[in-house]
Amino acid sequence: MSKSVVIVEMGLRDGLQNESTVLDTATRVEFARRLADAGVKRLEIGAYVSPKWVPQMAGTDDVVAQAFLHMKEKKLKKTELSVLVPNEQGMLMAIERGLKEVAIFASCSESFSKKNINCSIEESFQRFEAVMALAKKHKIKVRGYLSTCFGCPFEGKISEAKVLKLAQRMNKLGVYEISLGDTIGVAHPGQVESLFKKLKKVVPLKKLAGHFHDTRGTALANILTAYGLGVRVFDTSLGGLGGCPYAPGATGNVATEDVVYMFHGMGVKTGLNLPKLLEINPWVAERIQHALPSKLGKVGLLKPLGKI
Image (cartoon, rainbow, N blue to C red):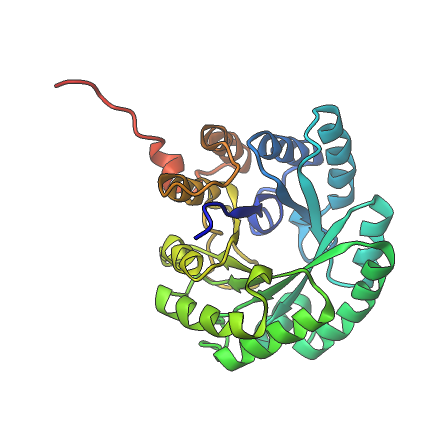
């Protein structure tokens, strides 16, 4: 089995979008710089969405612009930045800013789709056509998210057949990677094993990623299960930041430092510097004005007390 995984850091987008404290541009750029300095190679830095609906993402264009300059000056060029784009307008903004990667988003639940992006699943895929056409023209990579793959706060359990159908449809669009999301943190290892075993028969395994929230404390177990099936890309959020304003009860993404701690202990490389990640935790907590849920962030690394 491969002894390395890829971590996609979600703290600046999925992480901040549900916080009551809205961080200014300079703070978000500094957050990005610190993550890059800790070894983060893939960073979703924001979303081109209406600030009316998601005020935490206001100013994403300024964040991207300043992050590009900041990272260039600090020689952190190896970090790939991406943004979430819900439609053609967002894609045009990404093109103008010079981004080389964007992400699109669809739900496996009609109710959640309408609550989250105010359209049906079918309408969301129709919007993607213009985005994908522009991406192809401008040679921009597109990542696809499928949310509520394991359960929906409005509809309950989601059928595997529906997830498989939508994953295949998204793959045919031309996305280079599909992130399967446990949006409300309801999944358990049995579900993960069952779904991913079926998924890898219809979508190339190398194109699948896992996106697990830790609402019920099963995110690490779910990641380990997916890793055992061959999945090598996982979305995480520094400190366990996260949640969705349109998913009642959803808590944060699995904490980046907790995932890195687990994998490093297993001898699996992530490319991330764990002590530096831990240094970012209190810095972010101070700015959003509350402690973060990360387990490792609370207790730190093991430090022997010495002989008794």
